[in-house]
Each structure stands twice: as C-alpha cells, then as structure tokens.
Image (tube, rainbow, N blue to C red; front, side, top):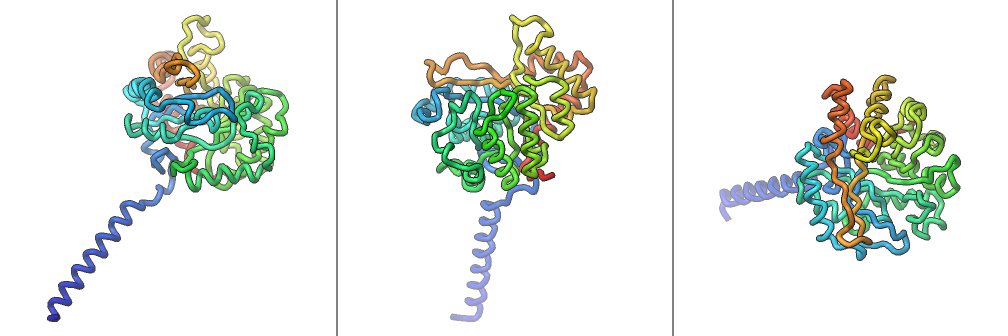
Length: 353
C-alpha cells in the first residue's frame, strides 16, 4: 500500500470517528443545568411557559388493589381528552402537570402520547396518596419503613416508572384533612422528605386545612428539607392566615379547583371572585411569588361509560383572569402566577435548610 493510501485511510478513519463522536453528543445531550422533568425527559424551565400545575387526565377510584392499566382503553381516553387539551393550548398553555398518583390511574405512557399529539409538555409523578383513609395505598406499604418507601420513589426518578423509562417530575402524596397526622401519613411525608433530599423533586401534598399542612412542613424541617420543597395542594381549604404562615416559611400555596360555578352566590367560597380575593390578599402581604393555581380538572373515569363528564382546562383563562384584571392585577403579576412560579416550584433542585 502506498503512503498516500495510508494518509487517505487515516483521514477516512478520523472522519468516521468525528461522525460517531458527534452522534453520541447529540443523542446523549446532558440535562440543562436547571431543568424540569417531563415525560419526554429534562426540559429547561424557560421553555415551560404557561403551566397548569394540578390537573388530571384520568382518575380510577376503584382502589389500589383493584386498579391497573387494564381498567381503561387508552384510545377512548385520547378521544375525549385531546380536544380539551388543544383548547387549553389555544389559551396559551404550554405545560400540563398531571397530579394523578400511582394506584389511582397514573399512566405515564398515555401522557407521553398526549405530549406527542398536542405538542405540550406533560409531567407525571411518583409517591403514594394516603388521603381517603389509605384506599389508594398498596398493601406492601404497611411492611415498609420510610426509607424503603423513599427508595421506591428514588428508583422511579433514577430509572423510570416501571418499564417505560419515563421519569417523574415531582412527588405526589396525600393526607387526610384531620388535625393530627396518622402514623401512616407521617411515614409518607417522611419518605417524601427523604426522597426529595436525594432527587430534588418537589413534594405536592393533597392536604386542605391548615393543621395537616403546617404539620407536614414541620416534619420536612425536622428532616432537614426546606419548606420550599413543599406544595400545599388545596390550600383554598385553609385560612388566609394559614396560607400566609406557610408561604412565609417558604412553602408553595396551591389554590386549586378554580372553575366557573354558575349556581354559586357571587363572591362565596369557591367562586372565581373568592379565589381572586384570596390571591389579592396574598399579593398585598407580599406572597404572590408563592402562589400556584389550577382547575383540578379532567377526571376521565374508567368506571363510567365514555369516561363520564370531563371538565375542561380553560376556565382560568375564560373567566378567572378577567376577574383578576378587573381587580387591577397586571399582566406581569398574572405571568408570575402562571409562568414564573411553576418554573421555580417544579425545578429539580434539592432544597435544604
């Protein structure tokens, strides 16, 4: 072989090496330094846009020991939900956070299909839901300690949920709305704190009243987790004073179930006017940067033919935002609630005291 042939061969080998190296870089692109975990992988918080922080695609209420993917037909769910999601997208929604926990209808693969079809970001979760007297907790829970429980959730974050390779973007838990947390629910929030300190996943806890919310925050602090790792779901079930106390600690105040209710007396609890007044008070006291909002809508129920009545995802835009603007909230302040606060709350970030 001539020397020139060797030179040509070396050039060809180097070109192949560079090509392979380039492909590896493209296909193995590292997560952004700051990111939110979607069903499609890490996404920059700056690309999440308007975010609905507590919604549902489907929810199966049969109980932990009877539920499973066999309970619903994904094509039927897609047929009912996609038109509602596209309407939300027309309203500007870019990211949809699905709060359906494991054993109540969590379906990461369904969410990935919805993301591919609609072009929206979807975020799923890990964790156990202890509300409703532990109906949605599997039997295996009772034989585990809090570390073993946390290890299950940490594994889902590191390796993916089941065999999907889809990773959760937050920890969803639930407790009963009692003044005192049960032993089971203390174990759940302790496991959630442990998992947060390992993964940086924020903890979103179905709670309601003040006392269980503040009790969970105290447990987080005892575990060394900052309260900013905690989202108080259904904080509208608490008092304004309780909301402000938790926000002062650093917790996120999630005001859910914002929907137009024609039968309610204007301004009464649960109306868009009531929610607007709560947010105005949070703003007046310097806590607007800790507020999250959602419809808590969707709820395709596989036990009902056709999934039952499905609430849409646009009442916030059609009815609530006009009320906020009538109360002199600016576009920047509304952007704070719908864009900036969710970006910060759901950022993968270990929050230590």
